[in-house]
Image 1 (tube, rainbow, N blue to C red):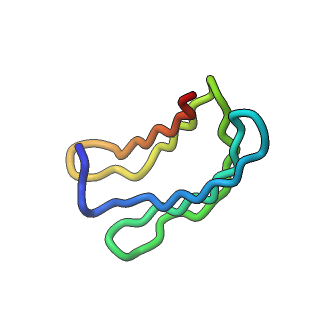
Image 2: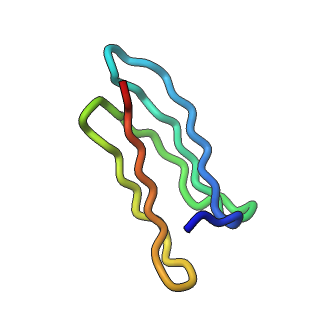
Length: 66
């Protein structure tokens, strides 16, 4: 369920056909939880398992769509 407590900043750079280099920052309120880079390509979703929150766990899925 979406929350105003968490937000994701994603900046991308194209590496080629349907391939990207992502600079990702995950925040909880104003506190940065993680700062990382990841490669993302077609047919290869990126799954990010975040922290436990209230009654569940935050899961973020990034996917390249044609």
